[in-house]
Amino acid sequence: MFSLRKINKTFLTGFVALLPITATVYLFVWVMGAAEGFFGSIIKVVLPQNWYLPGMGVTATLALIFVVGLLMEFLLIKGIAAKFETMIYRVPLVKSIYGATREFLSFLLDGKSKGPRQVVTYTFANKITMMGFITKRDLTFIKSDAVAGKVAVYFPLSYQIGGYTLMLPAEDLMPLDMPMDQAMRFVMTAGIIEKEK
Image (cartoon, rainbow, N blue to C red):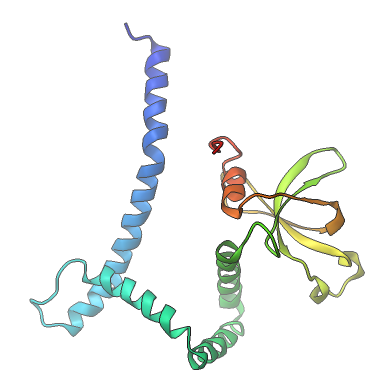
């Protein structure tokens, strides 16, 4: 005989099992749909009416990403991209959005457990310890004695996009031998779904 508690537990177990895969599939389908809609409409204009097949927009998107990756290997293209980026950084609102997005993606893609993107812990005066990520070691561009000898450490908030960037003395940080992705997953989920390997 099923009790209300057992029914609730069974429902929650199914919910926890299905939600991550559903969210992943939804995001994937949304990205592919956006790519198909954008590039598919361009392909429909270029190709004769009966030649278009569903999926050509997604294929064109993947091909474009790959070609751009190949082109970025050439110094001339890198130079043109750098000039274009310099122009973007001159537009007031666009430079903030573009710069933040670019820096965050670079942080995630280039981050390593050792080196400039290091996972660390910091213990505050009230004996609370937080896990964070060193994002910048050289803060001389700030031109203030208040940050002399300090590094920038990003402390993300759990279950939401956002966090705090604090300037802390490097000697007060405890480095962790932990991969960036594992540490980020631990912090972003508040440690609830982190499994021991």
